[in-house]
Length: 508
Image (tube, rainbow, N blue to C red; front, side, top):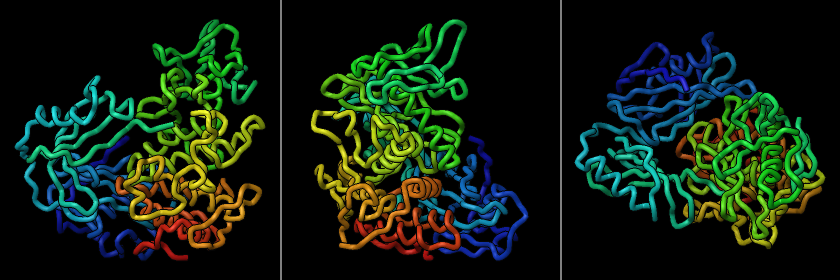
């Protein structure tokens, strides 16, 4: 992404400052601007509003804007004395006229004066990082950073990204180690869980748009070549001479590739049609989908999607699994990166559900169960969005939710999304209990995923259930000006899963 450095010194101001009034997360000029959205965002940043918590020696980097529904979302990262600041990101939202409307900021306090001279060497920090895995296959690098976590004092740290195996399986782990004490400050796991004629075991005979190379056909999208299905043994894209793919047997890898490739192309179309997004990565593409993981699992790790098998050794390439894993990629490629504090799996589940509803296949009727077609461990679906408690997850948010295992923590978010889309009555789907005995009116899944996606464009590295309540309310207000119907449904759905009102959240 492009980076335009804006060196900001504390106390710096420009004429723009007089034209802006701002609360903790809101910036609203008194009159429309004639500048571009990016220029307006740069001017806001240059004015150094207090809610950016800028310290001396900081530089801000503007990244490529994402445009949606007439708004521009401009993400920024920051450096401190030349070092990347983890948790220093923010997003400025403007309208099409370049009028700043909202600013979402991860950092909650200024860094102040911080020494950037480490006492622990990078080699020693890497050795500590490696101990966080059972085994290490490779190291991507170790770099000095500043960690500015939400609500905590900034620390100088070494960040290492290592590949290997954890207690849970395959791992690509980033570890931050305090550069003064050697203490592990945090970890971030990047591995997330779960016109030819194709013959899939889930979707049957389908049409897929393939690539011809001489007399050979590839299971690769001709217009978006990063969308391709591969055999995980050797990572070779499936190929053949007749442009007919798979045999309908779920244990056949090419057949699993047909289902996965079909879902990926359909999700690409859904993103364009419903959300105006250019592919899963936002720039016209996605990642290779590899069939052959020897595990009852599937994952996205920032570079690929790996698809495993169920207990019957059938490849689990359904819309709510492949759509979910690609959903992690969408999350990864919107501001703030992969969602945190117990929200990442529910975010991905919303894209799996939307993809399944967009496909609307008679072989996989759209619903709000996750993995019901693939029958992963022989006992049906793995998650239930209208009643998470039916499968052992919580329907209702509590202070313990952010610390739960990430799939279990998805319960309240999945429940919220179902209530927003279908309402508590279900509107043709099962009725859904609410945690406060309220009634919620749904807005339909297309509007629900649109609200979810536009909230993700306000996302920072401080993502949480509490912040998603704020971001989705703001998104509903942006998307449906002049109407409070959708806004009220978002609000009612969050209250119905016990996510409380937040200071500074939008009103309608």
